[in-house]
Image (cartoon, rainbow, N blue to C red; front, side, top):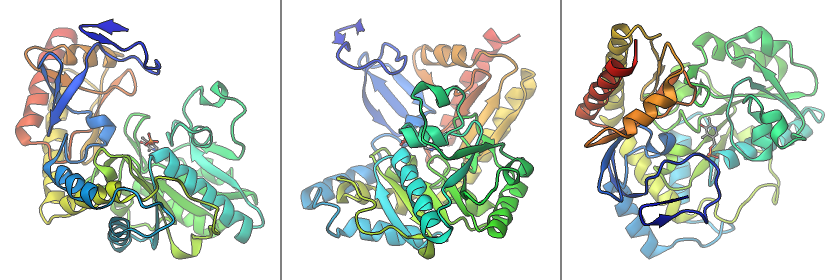
Length: 396
Ligand SMILES: *Cc1c(COP(=O)(O)O)cnc(C)c1O
């Protein structure tokens, strides 16, 4: 692939990338090599919680990089201790294991559940996950995922993942046998198109897990760290899961993820779990800066206010163009189209002049919005203004 002065042919082709090279970013804006600017409502797939190159992150990176970058996960370091205790004191969990990606945190959750099953539940190892779910791209997390076609690409899969339907408690209950150890789900399915698990479903899953001595695992890689207007999405539902995974927003753009669990579920023996970069002070120092910013008194309130503004505006657009409404929680939202124009709209938006707009269409019939959590109100208005223009040209 060659364009302008760039020769990208040494990069492995793993997805369709537009002919753009981004050189810098600030807040909700990215700038490419032609100095064209783009309003970014993707933010690395809900990763840049504070936007591009947030000052809080720059300060943390500068400070920590001069102190200590990686002493080894076999030694304690200060930022990881501090971030772990922030996470446990603000959740129902007692212990944290840091990793580098959402998939790796989920691998840890699967391993922890299997170990727990081995010790406490007669070797039970099967995990019930949901159709259309997304848990990552390692072999085990692909096997846990319910994405169409993923069962055959790298066959054989890792054994022991049973697929139920989100918001259908009977479909879960009917899969339970003595070999099942856990139920694992996203509180809102992100990649599937922002499909929330209902309050009823989550409460019933908790009851079902209690009744059958199963672990309830929430994958909050996308929904955690303020994305839905509470620190963690499970907190909307008055339930306590046994295990939670975090990723994406926790590092604000740096590779950081976490596996959290209740004390009596933490059954790893020495050597069961680890990893070269896990809990390194550079990434956890940035995680601390992100955590403290999100937890400033008015920050979470502002997420809710902005999400209402976005939701109301998307609904208006939906009415104006006869679309099928919007859904989501906080700043993870989707607008449901009445046609399969998603990718078409993404292209048109990116090519707008003078400033482009970056959107995401995880399913052909919808657009997903994952702005920075500190997105400005006028940036939301600009998104809506641009969508209105695009829709007026291409829809009906
Ligand atoms: C993105 C995502 C993952 C995978 O995270 P990576 O950092 O890409 O490995 C897992 N689960 C959910 C819900 C996600 O959204």
